[in-house]
Figure (cartoon, rainbow, N blue to C red):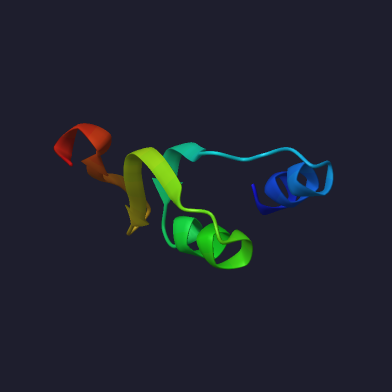
Length: 61
C-alpha cells in the first residue's frame, strides 16, 4: 500500500481517502507513518497462537 500511495502522489493524483478492507497487526500504523495518510479499515484482525482473531469492525465504531 505504501508503494501504491507514493506512486500515485508522484503522478500528481489527489488522494482524499485511504481504505483497507482488512487491518492486520501494526500495518495501519506503518502505512500512516510512512505516508502521512490516515488509513481506515473495515475489519481489524490479528493472528494469535496461529489463529485469526477478529478484534473489531467498522460497525463497532
